[in-house]
Image (cartoon, rainbow, N blue to C red; front, side, top):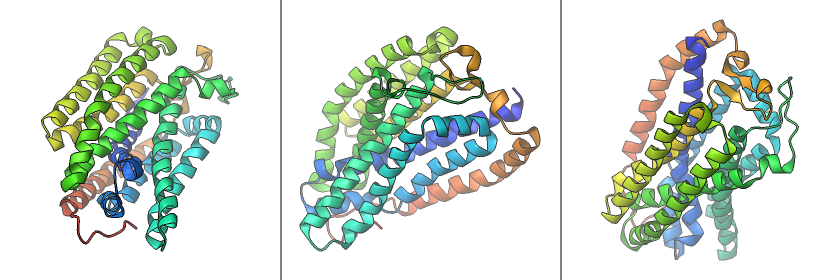
Length: 338
């Protein structure tokens, strides 16, 4: 593989990592709307805490998909056609979650607001769950032919590994969201988020053990890259423990950044095991290699120049936007997210 091909493989992984770190807590807050908040004022606080950010955070998923299309068109074609239904359901979940904020703010009855609050909660759970299923099913291996086309059955998509992967990602997003709520709110809502988070870490530990076992059983990660796979899994567990300690000590930032980095660790684990492939076939000779799936060297060169020039500016803007909206949401004068 050339240097630019390796660079763009890393860029795709970086974009998905940023997406899960930033959008992960949005999903977690959305999941908490009906379970954590006890009244309309608290639900207003939760939605307002992500109001300035959620739509911008979603852009990282669009950017990752666009970068995938431009840099590895064969990867994009095989992935998006083979996982079309899952991606369609992800899109539906994101649409319902997005419009729920606007529609809820326009409802004049408690029943109407309740409908869109449930849309937010369900959409916020389904999106990370389905994305977790997609990525774990992808690295398990799919029935791919020599043309790169996927002809899969239901169990290729829905199996123990993909279900556990989906649950693990959704649970991490929920914990990430609870830690963000602790950063952004005050009073009883913040205390409740802390109380809800504490027992969930024990569920997370059990899930991580099961996930590690299934990685060993269903993938070739330990066979091809035993040391790096083991080290990344250890890092994922260590970050979870650090987040748990931060929760027990009520250290908000430590908990928040640790759960976010745990999500990043999962992306790193999957991309590490995937490389130098971009799609894993049940028959190894039909696996799609990054070197064969990429655009021309000239295209990658031009894209690299543009990305290196623009990405730092985008990152600075995102950091600035979070700094501007860094203050906690107060219990009075809360506005709806639009």
